[in-house]
Image 1 (cartoon, rainbow, N blue to C red):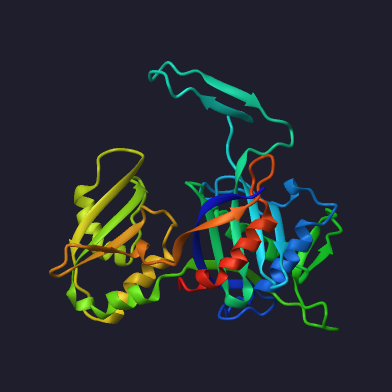
Image 2 (tube, one colour):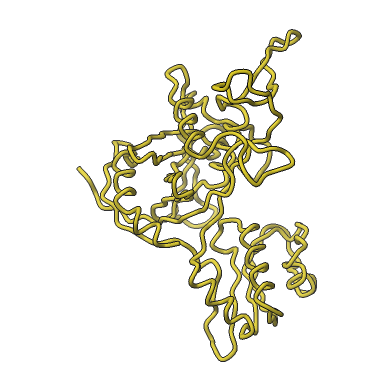
Amino acid sequence: MSTKETATITLYNISKCGLYKYNDSSKAHLGNTHIFFQQFMSWAKNPKRNLIDTCTYEVEDDELGERTFCYEIIENTSNNFLVITWNETKGLDGKLASINGNVPVGQASIKTKKTGINEILGYPSYFYIVPNENVIATITFGTSKNGRLNFKCLVKEFIGKYTKFAVYEKNIQDQKNDLKGYKDKSIPNSELLNLRAMFDFNIIRSTHQIDNLVANYDQIRQVVKHNKLSVADTVKQGWSSKLSLPIFDRQKPKIDGEVKFTFEYPYTPENSKELKDFISDWEKNYTGSMWDNVGFKLKGDSTTYWLNDMNARNKFDLSLNKNNENIIDATSLLTELERLLPKLLSLR
């Protein structure tokens, strides 16, 4: 039985997907989005491979947090894909922890439930890939996270390590397989190449809103910036240092830990190109957080025009099936996304 669910769907443009030459990242030398997601599906659904073996990367930094696995991947007759990932979350010594929130501070007791040896605490994320449109969409429900950064790493490392283009050779000394390079094995005597795997996608901005702001660049009187960072971090250089470093150095909170801050700064771009570069630089460094935002105030207008509101994102009602664990059925979700595809693409 299907139920109605309201989903927030955000569109991203696929900027890189493939194996690239080190001195030329303008175009993939081997593979494309459709090829690599077909290969990923074949690899992940190998009957000899368990879900726990589908994390393609090692957790080495705090940015990624924990492991991400392929929970499900399907392709339809239009050659579009739905990928459901499972994002591991930390438990308390391998246990699921909870507290009673209806007691005074300092009096709550922690209850834990032990998880099984192969159980992975976590949450699902949903990705809709449309290769012919060069688009990826994230689908979130309520306040769920989209798992975007981990998904990027999952796919990038798959391309680098497990693609069918990879050529391995057994090391006689340690009997391990060493990656020697990449080649198109369908072409006889093809050259072994030293390439690098790349996979990235960037949020799509609403073109007409951005164009309207750029057309009125000389009316901008002020920039407003939201951000979140550790006060121990070094503020990145670039446009942010030009606009924010002097004022932030004077007003930086005298506390430890992570803080959210907002500041306003007088600013009028010298020309439309400067504003375009400003917006482009922000997009490249965009974290995906709703708090990471830049707004503009125009002369004679009290409204703040936020860049994070000028994106290809909207809410849609979906008719979906769920399993006994309340996880959304992949086929029903992909069917609904296909039904909405014209509306999704019109958000660009």
